[in-house]
Image 1: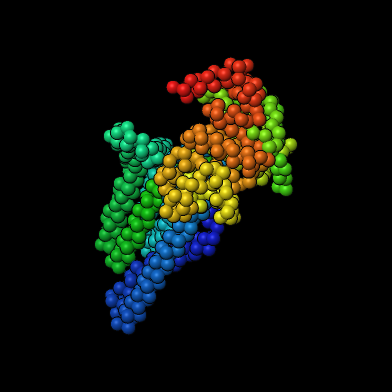
Image 2: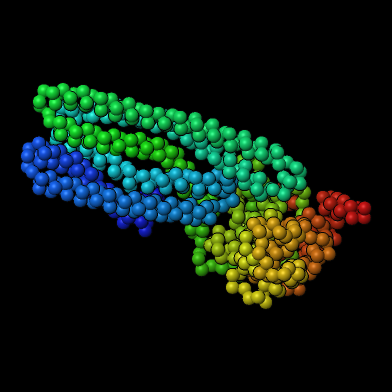
Length: 577
């Protein structure tokens, strides 16, 4: 994981190295000033070296201050730029990793949790990285340099810090160990809050339709209160580091003033030396305060580090490492041999159980069955959205694992149950099917999907801007655009997963007629609830509890298969009513 994080510094490594170098210059100059000032007081003022010496030493101090200021400002700018770049690279890496996840991988984390990790957790690590290359370098260097200067002035007084430092480090380490589990719980509360926000915004129309705004406000308020309480619980332990640091430092200052004053009275230490020593004490105080801040950020970053590490270390369940990149799908033949599937490998029951099936290229196949009969799960294994637990799925005569995911999914177009459109124009969304599609091809696909007429009725036509998820379209309109988008892929296999449920039966019939006339060579699988959507298919598969109950044409199944006949009669009677 540390190696992975170091890779995120690519493009910003020079800045990450330059920042500590500038800080070393800044701190060196800063720690030299009190020493020069003490020398100027001793020799120039008390020693009678004269005005020329005082001006010379004063000029040195001004130059040192300017160099320190320029180096410090440069370090701050460089650190900010390197930190932003690190955060940007990290977000890109996480997002790229998520794109390789299978459905099962995404289900394991949940969408709100992944969003939190890409935003809140990355921001925390970004601030942590900026602090590492700046304050984490500055504070120990200043501590060491200031301590060495103080020790050069008076060894006995410097021993005070040597005694206090180990005690302080032990206390801070104990607090950090106790705080980490609290910050882990805090980040989970962020996940819960994001889930509440996401769910409410996506379901805004349902919330308003059922007048449940108060309920959602109360639910959000509860999540927000839990987050607040978790934040207080985590941070009230960490903020103890501040008082511990201050007590340690102020105790050191009191001891130094006491012993130092006695040394001045005894005549073994000059006032200018004590003044310089106290200046170094203040520098040590500042460096210790920075260490305290670093400690707080490190504790928070460690929790975020773990959560991001879980995403980066996650191994995608579906990959094409062993696939032939040159192999393409030659036709739409589909074979399933002894196929079994379960969502969890340690699950007790198969969702799909011992499926054996052969579909010829160019056939139209209907898939019907009751709710929960695994219709969608069955077709999702064809483009490898899920991998089989047992058996083999073949497309074009070859196991799907032989193809790269790109080559396989380019040949298999799927219109999912949830019709998702993206922010942008209608044309932009359709080009997801083929980014190089001509205007004629786009219009032709929309005509087949019975979408052209309503798109043409919009003032801006295919340039009409869609809201997120296509909120300014009806369910049926979204379904037809999604079908057109799939057709633009010119696939070998077309899977329609209940994708005409929101259109009327007449439009459904026109869509099927368009498929027959324009894409007769494409293997078409139609998952449907309505018998009318599949009755003209070459064959119909009846699923029941993840198993094939029967296969046949509409005429063969009607009257011979109990499930199919029952569904048909209920829909016929419903239609008459």
